Structures are given as structure tokens and as C-alpha cells.
Length: 260
Image (cartoon, rainbow, N blue to C red):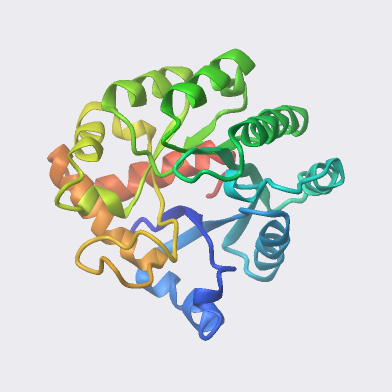
């Protein structure tokens, strides 16, 4: 039987899907996508992620607050995440971390909520989805100091060096690979795929963003992951089917899901 793709990171609550969300989601299985995790980026989107997970049997949810959305967060918000973390369809805390690409929110505010969500994930014993952009050194420092690797999880939309990826793999993290690996100038991402074991890679869209070639610049969705799998297969010198099989197994292990 053909192995189905597992999209470990999407945002189907995004307004980009407002016109055809249900139709698109219901079409994914026939396009080879068996499971996906809808990832919260704010309290509001964490709530809609949970709603989607309750509505569709093949969708799971992650609850968390992206570093760009931490301004104005409260302990009550953290309590909401904690209270819903035991829901049977919630598989991770995230996405959260550091994003210094933009000037706001202030780094100190981002750090505060990065640390708080690591603590929360440890308390509820769920894996973590780490967002890190233009903050390589500090992200690694905090993860090491706080022993966030005890949670397990993924470095989402990985954009740093192969050397740093190897350090994360040693810690037990998976590396999230999406559409970027197909871009012509994505040399670091290609080298990362070359140098880390396939057993530590998971597929992700980050949809509606980051569509791979040949659909770069259009609205992304999980069906595009076949192009990511094909590129990884080309890099690794193996079949696309093998890439799908192993990355799907990886996703199930990472999110602590089991299927027959």
C-alpha cells in the first residue's frame, strides 16, 4: 500500500483558505496526504487549530504563540494552552521561539515568552515546535540552558547551517524541511539535507506560505509536499517513496502518534 505524506506544520486557519478550506482539506487524502498538524501561532489561531482538529479525523493541533505575536500575552493565555494540552488531538506546543528579523516585539519580550512556553511544554509533557529566525546563537543557548530538548520536537522551517542542524539532531530534535529546499539559492538547506540522517527529517509546508518549485509564489498546501519529497530523494539518492515512508514514520514518532 502506498505510504501517505504527513504534513507536520500547516496553517489552514489562515484567511488564505477562507474561500475553499473544506473542499481543499477533503481533497488531500486523494492527493497522497494522510495526516497534518495545524499549528497555532497565537491564542486565537491555537483555538481555531483545535477546532479544525476536532472537525477532521486526520488533522491534529499544536497550541502555542509565535514570537511575532507575544506582545500582550498573559498568564491566563498560558493557562488556556495548559488546560487544553491534554486534548486527545493536541500533539505539541508551538510554534514558539525567537524571530529577530523584525524589530518588534522587543527581544526581551520574545525571550520571556520563549522561556515560559518551554516551561509549559515540560509541564504538559508534549514535544515542541521551535521557530527561530535570525536568532541562531541565542535560540541554541536557551534550548541548551533550559534543557528544552527533554521535550523533543522539531526545529521548524530550518534555515541555519548544516553544522548547527547536526547539534540539534544530537539533542534529539527533528529538522523541518519544506519548500525552501527546492529553491535555486537554497544551498544551506540542501547541504543540511545532505549531511543529516533522513531519520531526523520531517516534511512541512508552513502553508499557505513557502510553496516549493514549481509552484513558488502561489498559495501553498499539503499536496505540494510531493515536490519536497522528490527533491530530498534526489539529494539523498533514494526513491521518493522511501523519503515519504521514513519522514512519515519520523512524524509519527515525533508527535507520539501510532497507526496500524
